[in-house]
Image (cartoon, rainbow, N blue to C red; front, side, top):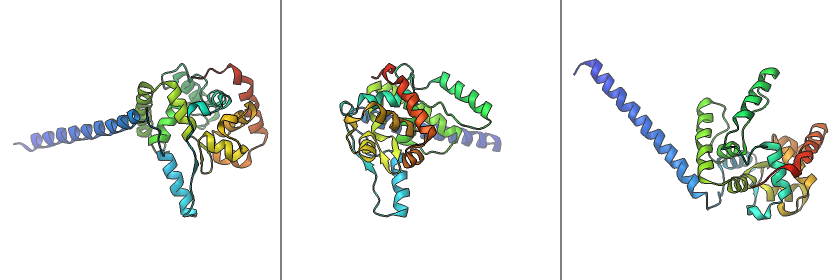
Length: 234
């Protein structure tokens, strides 16, 4: 066998092995997505990283997190989060390409990345499985998982899981823990203004959850309240 044929044969074998490994990873993600259609996630990849970070400072640190079913989360909070994070949540198929284009144009004007245009489904895919690194490979995997989630779950389930695992402060995850941490009430009891304020924290929950007020948060809360009752929820 000539050296060229030998190299070519092994190159194709390596390519095939890489494709098989990639396919195996996708089936692993799909298996978890299918399982979580009915079962609730205990911890997300993001929650695990945050717990490890907190325990580096304090080995006894624990996350504040308590799962509650969709019916026990205030409709005010559901509407507020959709209004703040993903206004077209109930109509898009996982990725809002119009929002991505608008974010890209705005980032060009500002000369820096200020908006990402990620939907609730995309944020959930990232939080459940992926790291926070910014790379094309990670973004591509996020899109694949997003479409898996949209195919396997209905919008009600997507919003239920998102509201139960999203970060709402330093070590605070999910609507129930956030409602109790900030207001001393359950997620079911959240009123319109409380819900709008919590939704306003989401772009940077560690920072905004610490300061809890200020001109930016006040304006953002008012904007969310303005659209609150026109937002459809699944």
